[in-house]
Amino acid sequence: MMTELIAEGDDIFLYLDRRRTYLVKVEADKSFHTHKGYIQLGDLIGKEYGTRIASSMDIEFVALKPNIRDYIFKTNRRTQISYPKDISLIIMFSGIGPGSRVVEAGTGTGALTSAIAHYIKPAGRVYTYEVRQEFAKNAKKNLERAKLLEYVELKEGDVTEGIEEKDLDAVILDMATPWLVVPHAYTALKGSGVLVSFSPTIDQVVKAVEALTDYGFVGIETVETLMRFMQVVRGKTRPQTVMTGHTGYLTFARKAIKLEPDC
Image (cartoon, rainbow, N blue to C red; front, side):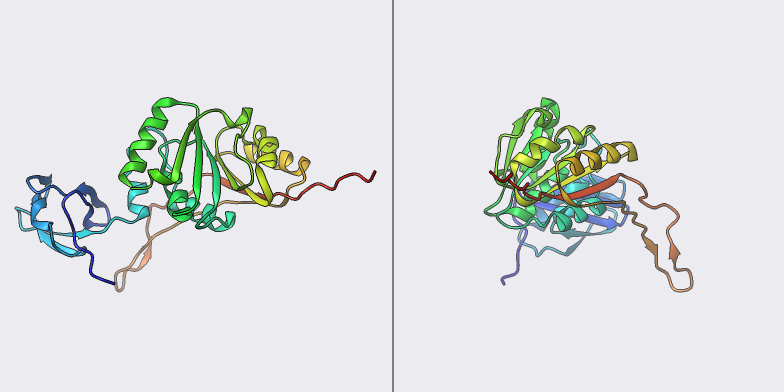
């Protein structure tokens, strides 16, 4: 594989340290200003991703190629984003991949939408429902920046009133009343399709699980993920004081087709 070079108009993930990173578009005549000096972005054109560049204060930055995690953390936020610790389990447990057809609700910032689109491309499709236009417009901008919009259909609608798509591989919900969607999800999913529900409170989980059980879903399980980074320095290695703790509960279930009554 040929070395990939930075071109004008590309995004770079400008890395100073773990806490100070920036998602920047490279433009020939632009400089990017930080508290550690400014960087002439045009100097990066034609250079390899991973190149080190010094600011005007002679502070060293690294120009990395953005990955899906970087785009998610740097989304323009109007709502709380989904965290990678939850997104990774959603992707793995839902079993989606290239070619999958997925309904998501609600769109929010488009962070989870971006992750789903990244994994179902190039032949898959994400149909994402959002009831608030301002959220959908913001999500569209984030998806465009991540170069994933072509795999997504943004829809204005309330999935508690119905899902238009059929034969879906997965229905992924990040909303206050997931139990109201269960009947529609059952109809929309193909046999063995997966429903995923993200809920901040256990009361929401209980109602969702009861609805899933009533509709004959199987393999119902609820998990919570906690992630803690480590401070690694010889003689001082220990868990970091601050961790990403509770964000929500993830409930997974698979559609089992109901038996037809004997005539």
